[in-house]
Image (cartoon, rainbow, N blue to C red; front, side, top):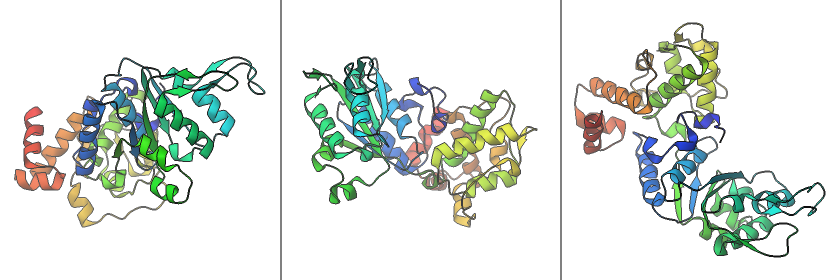
Length: 336
């Protein structure tokens, strides 16, 4: 599978598991812990979150961590497709089923047999498509366009949307019965602006990934560049973070990224004392990317040590700043 910018933080999307995810943000930790539990079941999963937060990456990691890992992971984006195209993409078609159907085509549902089907932007599906996917999920049956009989497939469904499904249900734009069918477990991925404790580690990981890809040695950021990144609101979430960092690495002629290489768009959130207290490693990012590219775990450990240093070695205060329990902090330090 081709990775998208939001997925560059994990080096290989196709093999990423939930064990590759690390966070110091309490809501994200809860999301990952629930994902770990859910991966061991065959329940349908609904992933909620803004565009760019990494819903596809999380879905792939759940599949790779499940008992269906040896089966296919088939992703499908339901946004902006006509009913005919959506039917064809999801369930396939027979030769001659419609104008341009020059050969028989298997649909995503059939291709995902014994594996996982990930439907992104499920909230954009038409009422007709919703009815058909409901039958397929309930009974494991579907019908190719232009075919006479039904086919069967054993599929674990993971759906995702950035839309408020309860509101769509109230407006009769999304089927209530389909919502109950696809939301056996609901996972909510926090927006990047809500994960301040994770931001330094994510920035460091992206710098390392971009440096490897572009064959450069980037050791970090100027202090002013670090402050801009840490005070920005990130409306595009991880996807925007990846784009900004990869562009900045491309524009940087030295080993330190200057502030002018950061092509940020939209309103800038001014830094506040609260923000900078939670991510007191604004300047340390210039040192966490060293000579060798760091893993996200290494970058996280560097951030934890910096926070510990900033609170005078007081583990209780450090855990509070990081948004994790004291016992979790001790485990992270022991595992480093």
